[in-house]
Length: 151
Image 1 (cartoon, rainbow, N blue to C red):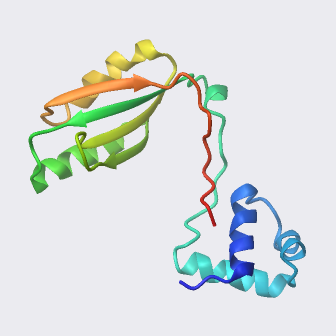
Image 2 (cartoon, rainbow, N blue to C red; image 1 turned 90 degrees about the vertical axis):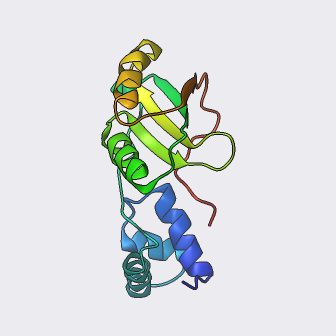
């Protein structure tokens, strides 16, 4: 999808605050409301804007621990991958989940009330599918945590 400077500015503004009205966006971009609305609809239809969400404070929910789980497996067949992917995706503690290149096969980011709660999560994780190695590290401080992409 081709984006011009107006599209990019609209995307930056929406990432910063999706609650803005079309008129507020139009005023900030320097266009009238109708073309801004058309641009937003076009980007939504193309799948560039996937949705609009409320960002909730993790610690405000009592989820004070962020952990990164590193998973290695000796299995890479389609059946195993399907079982593992579906199982991990269903765990509510999981907030990000990636298949990786390099030494680690999967990276899972979870949010928990306390680090001590990791043991219960670990037991659920290893019950999903056979794994070769599972290790974890916890975040001591979030230095940068954003949902805004460079546009």
